[in-house]
Length: 293
Image (tube, rainbow, N blue to C red):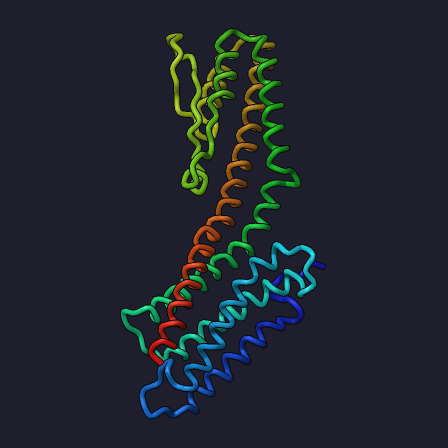
């Protein structure tokens, strides 16, 4: 039975994280320094050391995920710990500061840490939400299989259109060649469909039209179907309508699949670079502390 990384080993790391938070809060409440609480007291140094070690260990998840032969626990266990101890880090680091903030490298390190934790939570939501949605959307198919099915539909449609007047073959061929979904990262995230199609108008003039979600080609075929008085022609046009409707459904699934994958990857393009920025700020924070100790 599949077990979510949040439920790993009976939420082991949730309880470890909570225990760490409770100990840190109790120590902070018990501690009575002569000066206002800050990172320069013995408790501040202790919490700071724990926080720094947590940051380094949490960063190691990226290495562990790519070490396929590693025996240092399962990837699922590491991810579970990454989530819960990352949340605990927010409490530990905040108490380490003694709620003393300013325009300095110390606060910069804290802000970057909060940003990394926040983006990590966004990633958790993505990984809990999208895999199931992706599986449902794909219906057991890969994206390559869906693309191949579209190609097969186009071939069938072209064969049928070859037995109809020339505007039909031109329309089906244009629809195939001018399908344009996705593109830039923003277009993928917005599920943009910039498809076009060349269609013959009532006056016989062929014009290029926007064709998002295959609407233009389906509307055109619908009009041709309505005006058809020949039984054989009606049957063939009806087949084209059904093929283009199936094509529209597949295109929607492909666009949604690309969008789901893009959202899963997007947060990493933020989370990972800011994590490295955090490591740099952490080094600067520690070095400056020891220089002015």
